[in-house]
Length: 136
Image (cartoon, rainbow, N blue to C red; front, side):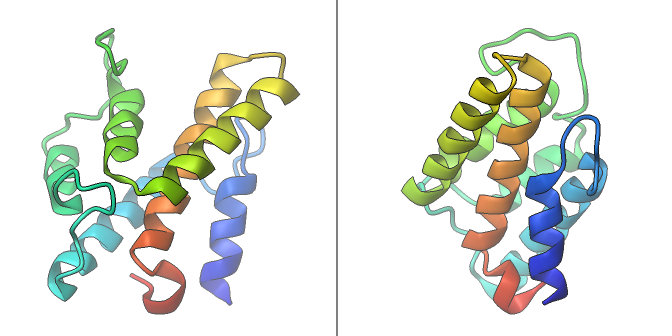
């Protein structure tokens, strides 16, 4: 029940009401990726390799905030882009739904929309890795 409550708080957070800080969400993702490696369940639903590859790239600081403006945007945007490439159809759908709702509710505010999408990506990945059933 606590994991479900945490997941709801994660996706209910906004840039002005951070029930779950993004740094905490990234820590939970890394722990889930690590556990998936131990369990042998780290293969991504979208066929894009292993979640452990993202964990290693995160450890290397690849997704730290940067001024880089690549296709994926650098920083958290690069992390979200790579996660979207690895999620299955359900996860991608959740991300798209979060983007559409946030964009409409905020008249296209980029910060709010990005925050909603990254939290949806995190939630989708955690659900793929059976966070509710297995934990971290």
